[in-house]
Image (cartoon, rainbow, N blue to C red; front, side, top):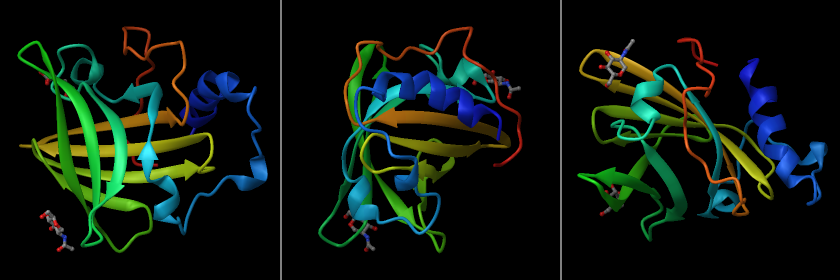
Length: 164
Ligand SMILES: *[C@@H]1O[C@H](CO)[C@@H](O)[C@H](O)[C@H]1NC(C)=O
Ligand SMILES: *[C@@H]1O[C@H](CO)[C@@H](O)[C@H](O)[C@H]1NC(C)=O
């Protein structure tokens, strides 16, 4: 997927001060306990930019991934609701596939980890179906808060409406 190198170069240039180890990159069989904790937005792309831009209904920023006592994963998102920043905690229901879970909110979303090194970055792919509309979002998150505060703008690249 051609967008991945783009997202990575955008985001990982920020991380070169840290030790990036290409051999640590994982693309399947994830250890989900290693993705728990705080994540910070670095770059985002979507098949429908108006939904992830400011005031878009999918303008949400992942903050943390946590595990409940019963084993289920939760994702905390910050989003704007009537001009107010709200945090919503959503259970992401595990599926058969490693790194894939589903969220029932505003339609149905499938969240898939595309790759991570657990230490510096994670790339998430989100597929939302609301009524009959499908939207795909690709997001790069890092473990450190970068000075480049994320804000989707008209120059954000569009992605094709095809699954990875
Ligand atoms: C993109 O999202 C906007 C806002 O939800 C919607 O009005 C529009 O129809 C969508 N475009 C496509 C191509 O799905
Ligand atoms: C765990 O608890 C949450 C919150 O009560 C619930 O939504 C979820 O379905 C539960 N998971 C399992 C596997 O029972």
